[in-house]
Amino acid sequence: MFLPERYTESMKDLLGEEYNSYIDSFNDKRLYGLRVNNLKISTDEFLKICPFKLTPIPWIDNGFYYSEEDKPAKHPYYYAGLYYIQEPSAMTPANVLPVNENDIVFDMCAAPGGKSTELASKLNNTGLLVTNDISNSRAKALLKNVEVFGVPNLCVLNEDPVGIAGRFKGFFDKVLIDAPCSGEGMFRKDNKLIKAWEKNGPEFYSQIQKNIILAGADMLKPGGMLLYSTCTFSKLEDEESVKHLLKNRPDMRLADIKPYEGFSHGFDDNEGYNLDKTVRIFPHKMQGEGHFVALFKKDGEDLTSSARRPSARLKVPDELKEFMDNTGFCYNPEYINIRDSRVYLTSPYMTEEKGLRIIRNGLLLGELKKNRFEPSQAFAMALTMEQFPNSLNLPVSDERVVRYLKGETLDVCDCDIKSGWTLVCVDGYPLGWGKNSGGQLKNKYLAGWRWM
Image 1 (cartoon, helix red, strand yellow):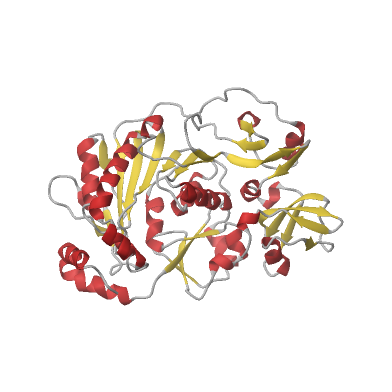
Image 2 (cartoon, rainbow, N blue to C red; image 1 turned 45 degrees about the vertical axis):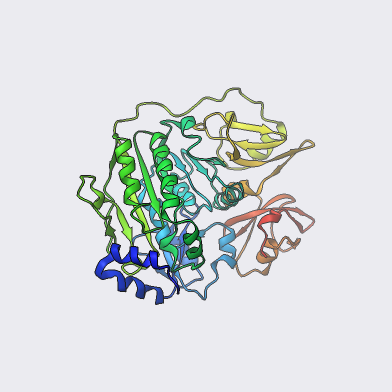
């Protein structure tokens, strides 16, 4: 593999005697990882049904290496949102940030959603996850991934995170910044990134990162915690960004990160910033690509209440109430929001929408159409099979599972289900909706999500 001389010289300076070991790691096989969605299934239960040969990722409780021969993205359990495919080192930031139930959490640069899905799992259907990407197309991909995971307590934004810092000043308990970077840590995984690095290297990204990290700190409540990460090795993008925050926001402090075998300390320059509290992941020391992680805590203690009251109590339409009352889904009707016939369940923690570019605020429950309610794909994914009495539960071995995911009508004469809306599940985990009539299940699986 060709590596630019400017890059190799910088790595020699960074690694010293370890440089040759780092270069040798480019001959190692690429590693593949998946992370279990504990919002839907426990890790132990997943391992009981998992069809793949997995090896635990030592520093990620719900993370596993899988074999290149396995194709987990072409399995019904993937469509059921039971796991997320993610490079092993990239699982580290969301794992390190200590999210608690009822926290209000911001994932600033979130697409495609790997870190957001784990943050949501930690929230366990409580609090609020605000997840954002500055790119509209990437924000839409982000939305799909959090909806597949069954996340109800969300708001997906398409904003410049620096531009909205004033709007959310002191608002979040936790902030995760997986910053745009030059991608040096991913050269081994994807050599196309080398050309991008030659065009826009560390100097280009450094100022972007410095602006973002200050904005993230400003959006934290007193006592809140911020996680800054990159997938690059450059000190300019890593330690220098940390120093920039500590110099310009004196109420921010570096926090300890639980050590794991193979983690390297950040490079301390003895200026008193405690940079050895930051963590570097090198591919010649751990089974993962390159990553940098720094955890901060903001001074003070938050004594304010985050919950808001709804601005006006909406009368829930009869057809919507009838459908919802026939489910076991717990919701507060005061936070039902109807816009152009589309029905959302918003969070009591979310601020007013005015002036924000919002891709989705809350869980899309469905749509009101001529005195009837049609539930959404997102709502199906947020349910459990037990919460919807009319469910079609197919074993993963049933060929109708894949046919359903392809959008086909199913013959269900052999199944004990009633007419009308039916929650289609695989081994007890929802995939989407169908509508049963006379033993024929009309497929309501979302067209854009279909098995290709």
